Image 1 (cartoon, rainbow, N blue to C red):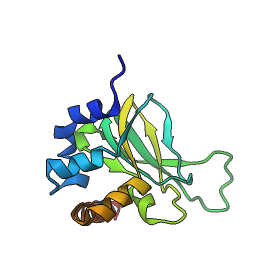
Image 2 (image 1 turned 90 degrees about the vertical axis):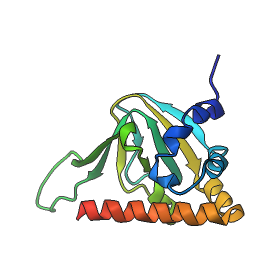
Image 3 (image 1 turned 30 degrees about the vertical axis):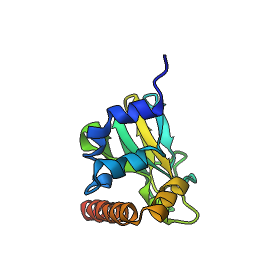
Image 4 (image 1 turned 180 degrees about the vertical axis):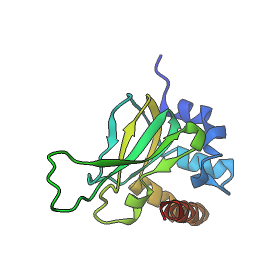
Length: 161
């Protein structure tokens, strides 16, 4: 018997409440967002998101571990046939991470980093279109989620500096 997305997400409600994306949202509001989410299973050692690719979905890591990396910009005088990648961070479900948020606010929405699965992963995905439809119909969700995304981006920028 295949477990559907709703059943998986329902089993993860306590986990989702701890994801900073949902900070200050009550369970009813989180469930409104869950209704538009899809669940994806990704094998270990897969490039899940490739830097520079176009995409506009936001992802929440429910289970597993990922590595986020970025291409290095090397001086022109260095001759190399390989792309050099710098690992920025390893995240697992214990960090309650979400990613892909920058693509929500860019046109075109090129991915700013690569995400590689280090262990098998379970991801929740919501499209930009569905997310913004929720924001249009429930302004409180829109304001809170946008504030939470901004806070996360400020936090990440602070760590990068």
